[in-house]
Length: 261
View 1 (cartoon, rainbow, N blue to C red):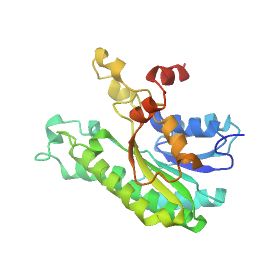
View 2: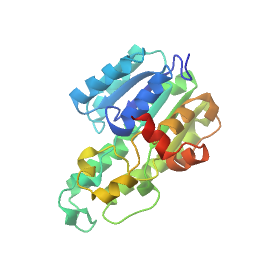
View 3: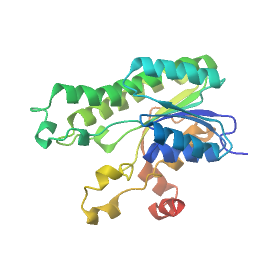
View 4: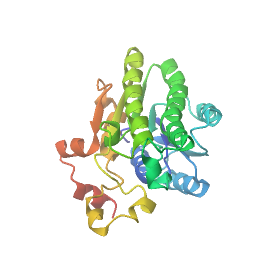
């Protein structure tokens, strides 16, 4: 028996980092998990790992900025499961993909770079939310969580499109919460509360003295599980922070790191 027996979840960006950690944590509670990612080997490997928890798991390889891919993926998931109970909108790209630092300022930013980040971080989230909401509204139940960022709540220089996409996602979260509360569908956002180790490539460029401040990839696990269960019913349209929530619930960073050993 688990806290999520017979529930079905979708996690975008679920093959690595925060998304993978959440996927495994939900699977431990007997939740079936479908993950979406862009790297075939990582997706397949994570699906195999999830099946070790004796749950059903499926992987879908593609880019969420493609509306056709998202629509087709949700159709396939609807054929596999009678319900979609949980959607975790985790997939996103950061500013490190703009390699020329001077181009990270709004006054220099190439249009293609702006559009690419907005397409993935905002439009892709809308596509998944819209298609999943069609199913959730029919079943009159569901939990949606947006994985946000402190940069979606306060702007910072050279983070224009990333910050704008996360600010807009926060607004989308509030609107989804308002529009669907009468259907027993709850939508909230969760920011980790700092930099995480979800990107080894990025962290490899950081000063070693800063690495101790990096939050573990499982920083969001407990709050996501809480929001995915009936224990959180009534919490709707809220912008939450995992690090703060963990502290309030006596879950320390040391606890989280020890889980990973």
